[in-house]
Figure 1 (spheres, rainbow, N blue to C red):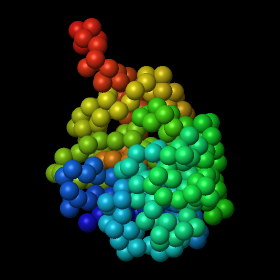
Figure 2 (cartoon, helix red, strand yellow; figure 1 turned 60 degrees about the vertical axis):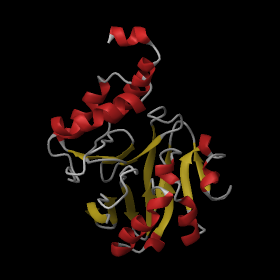
Figure 3 (cartoon, rainbow, N blue to C red; figure 1 turned 90 degrees about the horizontal axis):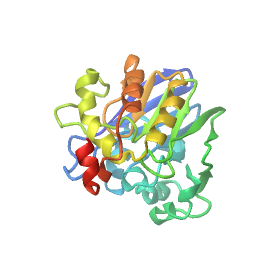
Length: 256
């Protein structure tokens, strides 16, 4: 079963994570759902797929009042990110969902209507939460054409969606990265294939390097903390991405 764990807590402000589901079917990718709480309001990032909603909701309700979740944040449009939307709306029809504005006509296929979605501009935006502001950070083409991350300057936490994601074997279940060199091997192939633009990579790395970040929290795999945050940014900045193109371009294979 997934479990709810605290990542940050200071006064009325918290970050919690719902992580690790060893009982999930092997055909499903494991996901992390992050809950940002300030006072009596909460926002849930990338709430997950339709098929894992019962597990995510049970883990959340075991340690938190789900009625305080007022907002959802979808980094992009993938089913593992937001296909559970209809079930969240059954629980609370008043929920609002932040996402890139380019998905305004796509996400309603998962549920909701024109009142459900708050379309965010390409440049990003401030997101109010219980008296503070979070920041939607542009991460377009990493890997989605309308992709946004979520930064909390107070907690110094960046929710980075698929950036930093690692496809970990079952035996590696630690919540935090403990051996960067060992861990990054599980992120390498994913980033080479799912990230399609070097320009987008460098744009994100420059932006992230300028932020004070204590925790870099991806949607899949373990969380980077301390010096491993900058290690990841440096590693990513040097990575050749768009590996799928090489399957269609023999001359690129030879050049590699």
